[in-house]
Image 1: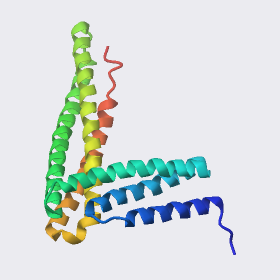
Image 2 (image 1 turned 45 degrees about the vertical axis):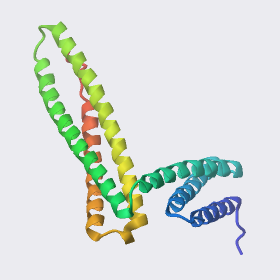
Image 3 (image 1 turned 60 degrees about the vertical axis):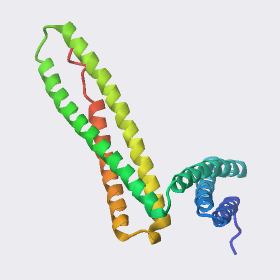
Image 4 (image 1 turned 135 degrees about the vertical axis):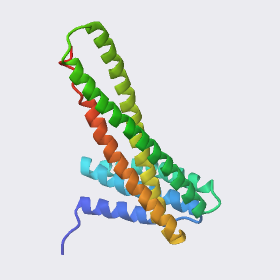
Length: 216
């Protein structure tokens, strides 16, 4: 018979703690918070075990994970509590993701136009040597705009990540209570947001890699 190692024992304790935590709830809000805590215990504990490979590191990781997981679960629970039922909550979440998608598409179009225009501008500038001061000013202003565009894009990518995470969690928890048309719409929005994120990341990379070094 194989003897359990310290690592096996710690993993078993982490999983048992998570199961007990996630099962102890009398309300939907408490259940959501506990699920967040349980997920944090498992993820934090396993991460601590992987990084520290010791009891202390595992317990520290589980503790930190429990706190962060509970905070996230409470955030989701508080959001759900603002609505009269799950369907109303899901409707609001879908509307919010629609806004994120619209903002992402608008920013993607902005980035695409900016990348195209700047490629043309760089090609034109490289053919000219006159009016260097005006050129430097224009390029400096463009670089400042690029920095702001990159900042906006990063914020949108983060917003997409948040919305995808929330909607996936709600779908997993409330799927049985939702109409199929609402489930389909939510899943479609998740797919669209993930696609928007990939395209924004690609355009962000292109924008950041534009080479002005030889323009002067």
